[in-house]
Picture 1 (cartoon, helix red, strand yellow):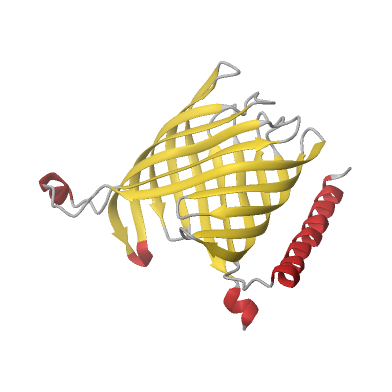
Picture 2 (picture 1 turned 90 degrees about the horizontal axis):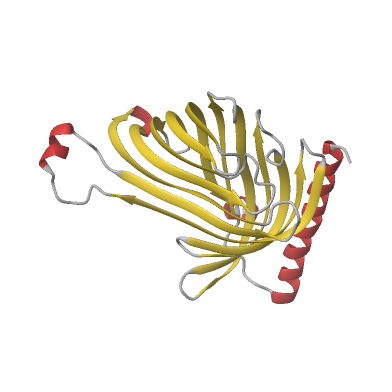
Length: 271
């Protein structure tokens, strides 16, 4: 099956399934829709090495929040599309997928299940599967409210930090169980016009799965600088990356452009 045909089939099935969820829930449960949350995240990167090279990954997601449960937990249905590419060691890494899912969302955690149509583009392998997951994101600022003399003399603005991670289980023979995520701590030194900040940071990342692990499973640490905007981040870092299954390693410069944007279509749909 050609890639264009597979993408067309996945999009068609996703639209049909998402429409079914929408109309079925409207008719049977007569729920008052709370919101139509959507988001996109992605990055373009270039690793100055022979193991990863140039790449891109990201997602686009559109959902419906049907009701809010006790504890400020939202019940959502959604459709999404994901991609992951790099120029080196592409086998069972480069992939595109589309999915239909159900999700419980709390301020920090998300617990969900989706049905995915995934294609590994360099291996002409495709799979349709259920995926179960637990995700979490948390951000902080270590600055606090008290004044620290050294910080004041250096005119440091804040100490932003964040962590994101997920644990997944794919019911298939290609991916299996897995986890990926990061922990990051930074310092904001300057603020420019248009709310652009200049940061330095240290971070650690991990990525593991139980099947087709070659040049996928990896752990790394990095030191970097970046310019941050409300939507975009442009930066570079020096990374120490290890591929434990291949006993391979790469110490390298990495350049990247990342983005994140979210929205709620309720005003548009109901206008």
